[in-house]
Length: 312
Image (cartoon, rainbow, N blue to C red):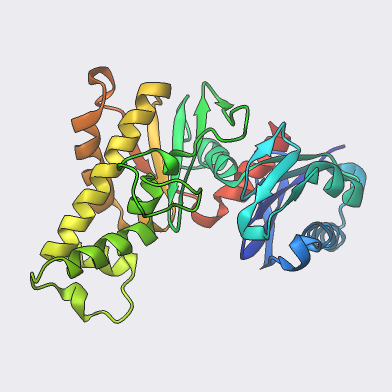
């Protein structure tokens, strides 16, 4: 009888593994540093070893395991092949087959943002809705799209890459994707800091932001909340770009709700209220009232979504 399954969230810094019962209940979680040396050759053996240790610790036999779902920070084809993960030293390949050979289990893969979208759809901010767009806003900006209960990865695994919607004219500020004008360059955590530094250098307006030795996104948002003029200007421009991008996405897939996660979501309603305002300015009239909500699973969204790839 199948009783358990694993959800893995592979990150550039940390690997998280969740052991779940087949009803989707998390019973144990472990995490450890991701070993990216030698193009990540130790990544899969380390995961297989951790899975085995969790089974031994719980007295779970191999025949009781449904399989392993895994989110990875890169594009995935056909639930099994990773094209390339830049922040894992270009690690990739037939990962599903390789991890399956190491563990003896069925393995299904998804991009990490897609896995997190599934987690929020089944257990978090998107629970109870038919179609959602989950977006994580942190160091970068990534999304997962679920329409009528079905994850939409795209033929190249690139669906949901809204961080690379063009919101500015081509310029010398090159994005990590190699192009310019991307939303991620302006509205991610790093993008906000870049905007703030540029604003401070172009004006003599008094601002508390000038007092920080190493300015962070949190500093900008907290200062905007306190009414600092430069911080407010930067924050308003950021949420304007996000609202515009979400309006563009809505014209394509018209979700019931946008669910916002990632580090920037800690700004709560201060962030959502401004995104909603700008979204309505740009949205197609019939989609102006699309809901926005904060993600609920935080750092566990990836493992919850990954295991649902196996269980559902």
